[in-house]
Image (cartoon, rainbow over all chains, first blue to last red):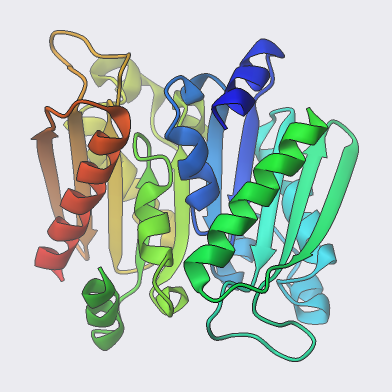
Length: 152
Length: 152
């Protein structure tokens, strides 16, 4: 992760995050690195649907139709973040960290990660079959940073 | 911290954070607790001055006059967050986690924490004389949660 900060620095790229289920863990992982202020400018933790709608300007009908944990919402989150942050790399995370909140169609551990660089957008679906909430959050952060690393 | 989530739940209070030097660690500490979605709605990580000005609507002249790490900026951050979040408890953090960025007047480890509940505002100044960045970030989170706990 230190190497990702160095890579972004070298390529003069800046990064922003919008997190739901990871609740700030993605941003805090990057900001634990000294010098990260040169590559990270903004993180939004839109934990509630209301904050997704109000702060991130996600269409409430989109959330109603597909749910907040969906590729559609994940894509809208990363797109709208990029309009706010104005930086080159934007990342969105939405999922179910559990232990509650899972359903048959959307089980605990289901996570969507969006990465946008310029006009290129990647939406990744993961299902982390891990025992607890923090393990799912940590696995999501690891996956998100891996995806970003392959993108820059 | 589990007990703080329970306390907020019991008192039907919601909390929001705006973080600078802790970079998401405060929010991720709360969101590591299952059920935190009932008490936490929004976190902003305004890491750059630009994001403090643009997202949080901090007056750029205030930052120019006092600096981002100042009681004045900390107070403006918690006030403006409360206008955005519309929840009862709001917390702001601004400081110098280091290892770089310190000066004689504003050394590494200097941290301001703002807590607002209703019209009551507390601005706390701490100086954490710890060896590394992550220790300062962790000590800041611990202090912020302690202050919140005494406030609710």
